[in-house]
Length: 358
Image 1 (cartoon, rainbow, N blue to C red):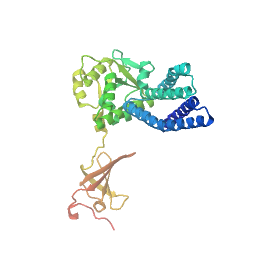
Image 2 (image 1 turned 90 degrees about the vertical axis):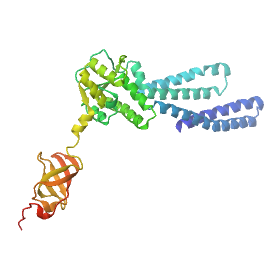
Image 3 (image 1 turned 180 degrees about the horizontal axis):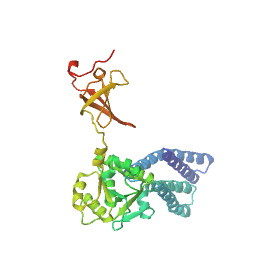
Image 4 (image 1 turned 180 degrees about the vertical axis):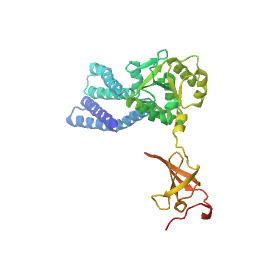
């Protein structure tokens, strides 16, 4: 709205000055000049609103095409915005040379504002690519050697939720390498028609920026592998040439890795290993040794020491080998806390429950 109103104001001022200049050539009386300026101001105000909305809609459409590109380089936006202002002013020099009217200045201001605003948008959305082109960020070649402990990621890994957490925590190493085919594929997928894949690709691009902001070095590996046709094959070849371990969530990459021998971190297998030991619905057998803190609860322990809280089982305290069904789990400082319920309890006479002393 601010952009629209400023552009409307500039166009309204231009309209007033044009109306004043026209009135001076037709009727140079005070009434004529005031009337001409008023008509020009009204026309400029009404037309400026429409023009501002059209330009703003065009900018919104342009930024919607660029918003999926990483935009961390604010400096590039400022530089291009300032350059756009200068270009707009230089483009209006013929006005001051040949026209020489009072409305030259607001026209120049309007042109400079539009070109400068466009430069700001381009700079902020394309800052990452501009910084790479200017050699302001580190980029490796496929012929370079990676440092010890660095990880190279493929498209599936960047789009995985675990990448952001592990990367920001530094668990993927002090430096993360992103092959150029991976960045190209992410940008293509982000602009694609599939809303789910597009959203995941945008999240992956944002994750790369977040990992870099967390202090981890993220470097782009420049170059392509012409002999490989698929992105997975290109990534494996780059990882082999650099001697870096590959982080992936793709089963196809894991399958192809066996033939190349590249060390791999499989995020899917890692998440499966980190998943809770006991999933909802799993059946366990436990000895109930004491009542719980809440009413009608009973407490038991698994062989590995994890506590099991069984609902509606206080009357079974002292029973052994009670079959329960897992409801949920919760990690605690003492280990895993398992909540369960008795699974098809038989009659009380079938349980070996010692009599409580009165």
